[in-house]
Length: 501
Ligand code: NAD
Image: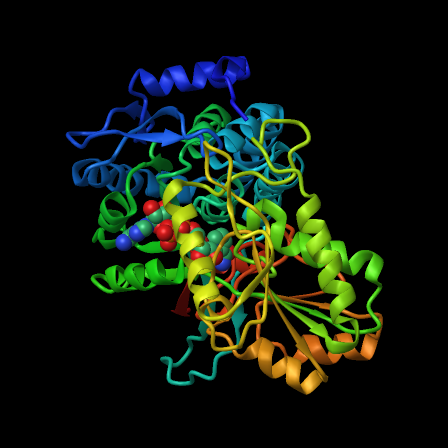
């Protein structure tokens, strides 16, 4: 499982050399070192070896980044939409041109199998920039027939609304799918005419920094995008509380979402929150097992379960329970686990030693509560943070492993008798991010998609997303939507104009 970094693609060796020279933060169009604060190492989770040092932005750096974004705001929001669109499209072209470098860097930093970044997530990031390039040119207000009737004689009241950028955006993103989740913030914010200070996750800052380089190359003007890397409780918290930030676009855990919300109240920042999930996959007896068994297994084991919309709770109708569970367990046992850069790897490590310990803690407590690991549940290998794909049975609805987001390759299985029972079970969660329903009955599919409380319901598939489709949650899975036309609303205010003419 050893991996030799000298085999990296030349573009990434040069990129890491630029970081090593101190090009750590992007502020006002300049790459610079952090002021005062110590740098920290970013590790390859598959080997535990250091890849490079990441700058820890201090409050002075955060101040400078926010002020640069504020200075750039006036010109950027006045840029004609077609020019913003042209630049965003160019960003997409540059991501595509550098996709092999970016995929390698993402795997090295996050651990995911190369094919996940190369064929799913990074093309998804390209599509975000292309979709929102179009949206930059489709911003519209309304003209309204008001009933105001006390204008001076001879004059008429004309009323209309316009959309305006919300201002300086703090974009704070997690580590599980770093590049595409960053694109989901940057593309609509810039399309709307906002300027941004981006805070990548401390465990996976590398592709955000490479993306920022590409965005500068694409012509994003100085100060329109600023990047401050650093620890969440320090750099992230300083940014979230900054009085000159107008809006926080956050993706991360529900717990951090609460801290961000608290920080936002100082100046009533606008806030959107894409938070955690514990999404159900629900299998009916008439499901097509040929697609259902691999479908529900992939729903949890893709990217090692480190996916907000992972199908981490499996509900199977009693009549097909054993068939489905045996199939999923066999799928789990058959997954090839290894360094994400090895060509046949299907599942990589979890992102960090800290996260591996967290996942293990969930498994130990589940066992203590009486759950059985049908397969998996172990650390693997001498180096790195590998956890074997785990199928947990003998669980009860009130157990922690059923209720809480593990964010690892851990599936909990329960059975059900009828629709009413499974709807109640699926909805008995603090989260409401997504769900999938597996059935050949159109009527069942319609009833289930209406009754499940979630931001997205998939039928006979899971985790299908696209730049055109709004994604986000209800309940404690968050506020607002990323992607789709709806995401533009995150970054635009309404202004009403009344003219007596
Ligand atoms: P996290 O909440 O620990 O961190 C997310 C980001 O917030 C990181 O950049 C971190 O540095 C920063 N941060 C931490 N503390 C902060 C603070 N006090 N103030 C400001 N910023 C702070 O989340 P994570 O562990 O990186 O990511 C996993 C979580 O993200 C899971 O819960 C997952 O479900 C969620 N997620 C949600 C979506 C979605 O679309 N709903 C998508 C991906 C991930």
